[in-house]
Image (cartoon, rainbow, N blue to C red; front, side, top):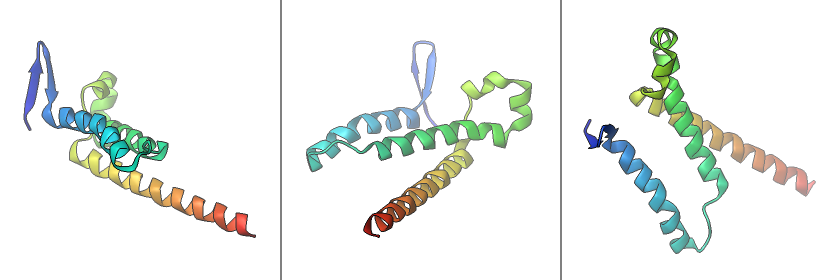
Length: 108
């Protein structure tokens, strides 16, 4: 993995690319569809980030209990990313099912 250094701060290039993509995405989406991105999208991005970050606790519980502040510096890595994607997928499925249930109740 490569890193970028800004003064005394070192940041992963993949994190920089992800932040840039999240800043460019709303502009491109708005130009293409003439609408704002639905909040559902941002909710899932936030859910992915939280699961990815907090998965460190599940993957390395002993290290976390010895140094709780390590959660600020470390994340769940590839395993955390997969867990984040699983949770986002499940959230989308549950939201879709809730939407279908609401529609079916409205038609009754």
